[in-house]
Length: 244
Image (cartoon, rainbow, N blue to C red; front, side, top):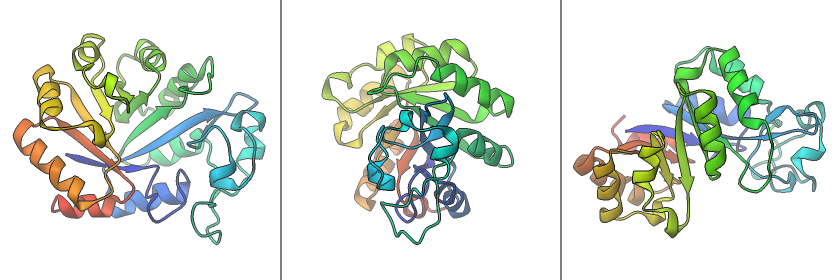
């Protein structure tokens, strides 16, 4: 069972920043989960929300700013403003990633804002850095997941979901050639985990920020051998609970 740092080591550092990513790898995380949007000039940037306000204090859409403008904006609003961390470009991250061995779960943020060619741009960047075998694409938008899979069949994909109505889609996920489901922990119980195990679909489960949740996941994994990764804000805690 792998440990992916949710938006980097976001429990202690500003989320989705190079600082949080570096600290996650230093802590021993097997992978990083991050989110991509497009700038006004069509470049990929790493940030969770469509609006900048929560993480930067600036009330405006990501898509209203150029790449050059975005990468100069401080992104530490959720933590101590003393952190000198700015919004990173996806290319900056790929350049950082190429020298390591960790996995990255790239969430394509098209569930609220539609970026017509974001999947192709992400695939092209990943291929330019030779990272295809170390990427998992995911999205709440099924169309984005399928586009990513069609553009790059060699890159693993996962379907993100948080609604109860999606919890029984394991057979359809496998049939579509998607390797993983990414469920909210709160939706899972013994029965749903067993259902996924019968379909042989891997689980990357979010957001695991307590020892209680980790204990439950360890029990499910011991019984079903179906959990590929836990995704949490505190990778150090997850690793400790796994005895690593």
